[in-house]
Image (tube, rainbow, N blue to C red; front, side, top):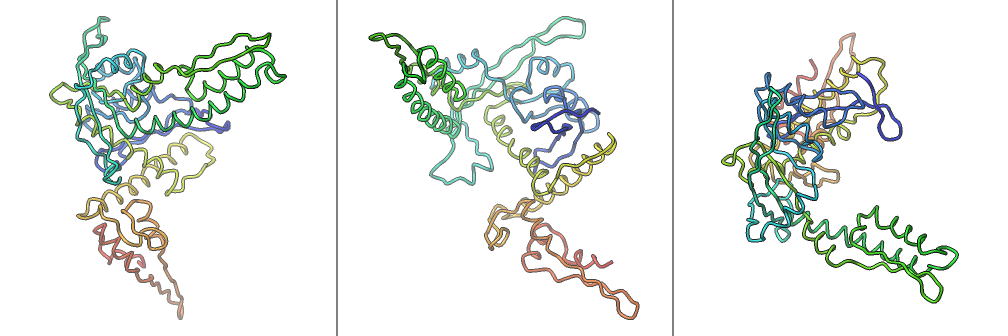
Length: 390
């Protein structure tokens, strides 16, 4: 195993995780070389899980780059399938804009996270599904057609977020642009080219370059610069706001747009597991001297994360677990049970050891009412706590 480099020139290895769709319990983890790209791990992981876990269908959670052209061609050869996001391209954007609005049907899908939002701010989804055929290489060097299903999805929440962000970036960019335009011909911007380059440097990092038209000229012997909003470009950008594209190898009968969206809306669970490894489990940078210790450390992390996730899963499967429980947060604040706040409640326990006349006696502190409720929520008998003295 070889290390790579992360932010700040720190040495690193890559940690890959596979979870279930029921509670996001991590059932597979593996260490990769630090310089390994995410794209290179997809097919190898799918193939490794096929035989021991009897898996043939996977949900790719991550950036759309995971579904690269090479991975799309390798999936049929590996005998596995997927639903996954598709990288955005000009062709896909044009295809989405060409869909008549009446063909975007409402999708009745609510993720667990969205279910906690106020009822007056519901997130709505609209989708359009259609089949496509892509070329897939065969073993003899030929090519055959691979039938795929592609779903265009529009989220009202994502659309609103995109527009809020663009409005904020436009407001800042236009304030800076106005100052530059007013100083053209001065010692700060003696030429139009210099002012034009500065305006481009303002627009590009804010992804506004295509929305403005910058023109320069001369008036009364002084250079001038004009920067105007292109209304058609803004309308096109707003029409594309909040949309993404999902693709699957499943047949049309098993690839309903609503079902695919429901699976994809569960992506936050695996993201929470990575957060749990870095936060509540208090994983910190560790100096090791061999590859075996790197793998061993990641194995321990995987076991700890499995216990952490199963604890949360069990608490949330209890009837009424979706209701906020009093006292789970500091200040006796009510909250839904999570692996993090459950561990915080249970970590405060004392074991007292006393030596009397040469005999060692151990006593464990009594459980608090909140700790007793947590153990009942996890279906753990209170007698387990008493056995800590043995």
